Image (cartoon, rainbow, N blue to C red; front, top):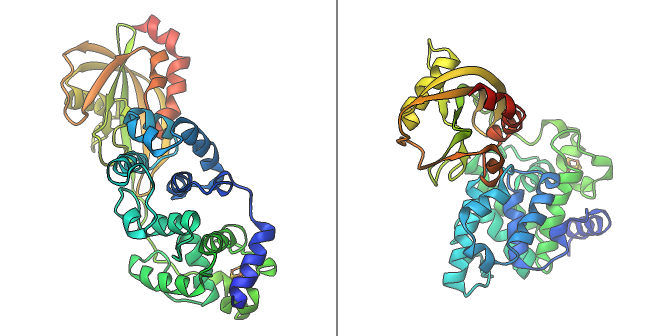
Length: 360
Ligand code: SF4
């Protein structure tokens, strides 16, 4: 064991956080945790992880579950393709691997939603395979330690970071070592104000020695995120509201929402709401008061969403875009998985329920 490995593992042994997925060697549980932790912070993941494993404790139960059940448990965690892929992958584990999570990295990578990082993490942590798992935390540590000029967010640099991580890896306990690298990035070598004085790698870290910590890692500057203005309608008819289901794939696939869409130039939000509902579900509605203005950020864009109460006037639902619809009473809404932006205003609709029933 070299000095890097010894010092890092020593530090990890004394300083790592107790997290639910660290108390298990079950490859399925570790896989679920790694999927949830992609793009999401640990403290957000913990309750979702616990609920998910309570509902679907093994691949067989997940494979047999309805996708809507899975999306409902995932509701609010975001990046819903992760849930859809996990569900599909559990079915493949049942069909092709006898219900047992495969050990080999190549077999893991063949499952939906498993890329290089998750395959390496699961195979090393659950099965002790000597593969380096390279996430954003690990890249940051490596970029600083070696003073690398390659941008950490450049996909073309992925191979170089992978080689650097493999060179660090302690191959007799790769799972623990991978977790130690990630933990160092999460707790010490943080994006801003890293705690170099408490870092077990400070003795060999080039940017620390050069007093250049704040100049690394390098990143490619991304274009400004666009913002879209959206209008959606809560359409009331006979004490029920209309919800529609998005296509199974793509952004927010399979989730339910209220009909609406982008506001065009020259349109008021109210006009856009009426037009979008006609175009999307073929109903003629009268847009009444605005219930809410919601701001929400996705990875590549932001939205400002104006939510209107609408009265149904005429027409039968015919879908263009959505794949399904329901007229539901408000107390039934919680049975359906909704995206975060919709979930922000659903409590407001509920608080207006009596008013709405009187109005329509
Ligand atoms: S010394 Fe500082 S910059 Fe270098 S690896 Fe440690 S925390 Fe990161």
